[in-house]
Image (cartoon, rainbow, N blue to C red; front, top):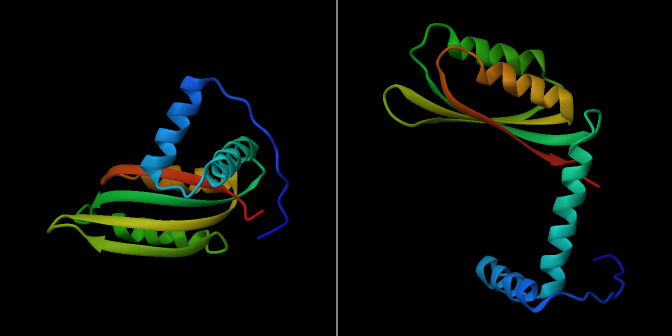
Length: 136
């Protein structure tokens, strides 16, 4: 771990009680680690507001693989953005439906664009793009 600096934080009793309850619920070892995670999440969220920021994204798709040429279109989008596609996982949910998880790395706007193009394809039942900021 990098060198850390000790700081003091003053909180209202109700806010501290809610924070401690969250710490317990999520299984943090101490307040410091929980506070570090909250700060990281907020900094990451701010960074993701920049369309040109580096990010890693996960595209989750549930789709009907019997829809004509859908699988080929999804593969084409992945291969045409090969520099961004890190990995993918394909899971058969039932006779008709599959779950596809595609991990992309690159610029926020590009990841969103590729993910939204996948989600908009006919036969995709549900989709979501989740982003985290770069590896800083």
